[in-house]
Length: 460
Image 1 (cartoon, rainbow, N blue to C red):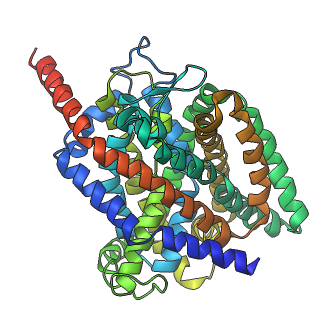
Image 2 (cartoon, one colour):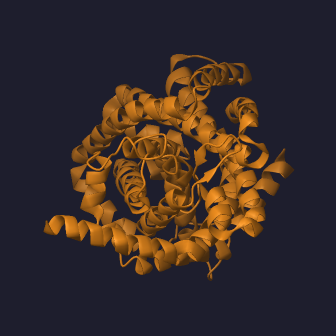
Image 3 (cartoon, rainbow, N blue to C red):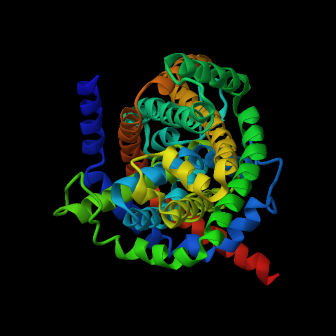
């Protein structure tokens, strides 16, 4: 088991090397400049689209703009924000948060382009249904001779979509917050019981397909984000005197990184810290990875730019708002300096310190909803990948593997789970970013046409 752990850790470190960093950050910067900073210029318009102002029920697709964003967010707002941020701070200190921000700002342009392309180059599955996602973008946009790249993405997507990290951290949260403090013995049996309950609820929703997933996500996610938001803001208000100090520490420690010991590249610890922040940022908002375009590609719209604008709100909500709030809650309460706790347990300590035992139970409610809703979304991503590989009629075979992996996630170590998913996320980013960078000029043409139409309609 120790050798397997080491192998998966080495694989994740290798996959997240300098080439991927250049592709994600360099590619994202190129897209930001190419679009003339469109995510920031049309931010207000993106909010109007999200509110349904431009919805047309006759447009092709399955779900609304709002449902597409909440489906995508239900997979990104979750353990990436609550546990991923805690992992980043416990390894890299406050400075890691700065690099998560950089990842998100650049990620907004990447998300815009990948989602716009998912609408521009929708393909049909073997049953004739309209589908979107990087694998269809590659085949429809770049041509059939690029299909091996689409196959590679789909294979990696099936592993990357497995819910093992979320389930692992949810089990840890239930054990640390609910069971152990109340005298319940935690062992393999109790973990298997948790796994069994998760399997039941997940199966109930995912068998209903995308419509049931998106409807469930659009009800659950906004309410939990609001509760989480209120709780974290309360922590920050109660520790208001500490907020400016730690906020500035995020900037100053981004370039000193004396906490971080780990991967060394770019000459040492600062390079390692940048990599850690980008890696956790990508895990949190998934920009450039290719999962969200699969949800956005199913939206009822005939306007690629419009869906791109909705998609770009994802990294903003997910990383700039939610991750920053989590990070500040962990930093201002000081728990990151006084404990060896990692992942979700560290975030729980910050809540417990502020609200006593009630805080950790409220956090547990948020964690359960975030985790369970992401279980629904990821199953959809995995079935789409399998449909592309062996036909839509076989997609439910993936759900069997998916459900079995829930049991695996409840009984294995955090390090192994996070490295496994990290590694395959990295591999998914290569085909997604390569196809996006090649097809980006086609999106720019759509941007010009769309902004001209907007200008004409506002002149009237």
